[in-house]
Image 1 (tube, rainbow, N blue to C red):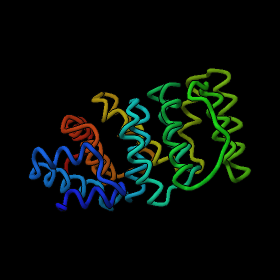
Image 2: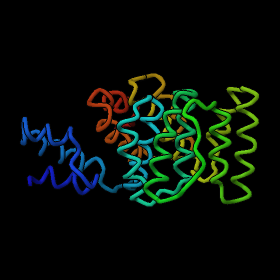
Image 3: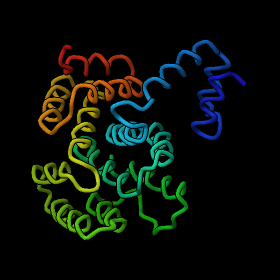
Length: 238
């Protein structure tokens, strides 16, 4: 088995069909792609777990379930908790709306399967309020339960501005990581002005340039070279 095939078997337990086809048509291309992925996903100023779970949130926001589910396994293997995963999936609402939350349920259900936790089923047609209520059942502290109580109230009231602010507050996931995720979402959908705005907000919340650059590498991995064009505009020159 080639190094590329071995790498992806280690990542996913099996060789995905798209990897096998890349190898079959051009094994050298797979080697180059494997090297790029290995560099982008290696631990740096962002941990491997953080990179995977950020990619889960970014792909939920842009309604791309396939990549979201692939990176769910990486996040769980890296030590992400169900509470963390739920909160990253909720942030996706700030861009992708209720559909992003409905798609995100695929990630959460896969995580439950990976961890071996049985839970009540929830319809993929559920409202944003219902999904937030579902995730609240996995909260493990009084503080987190209170956070969800306020969040559910805002979903019910459809108060968009207050809801955005609440979603970006620290809970199980720290505020700085939420701003990194928002920057990444707009980077992957090639929204230059919004990427600049969220990168600035991220800096205001303690995010430094090395972390924004590493965010750019994983955006490139999931959304291609154009996404690097977008975030590079937002990076401060050394």
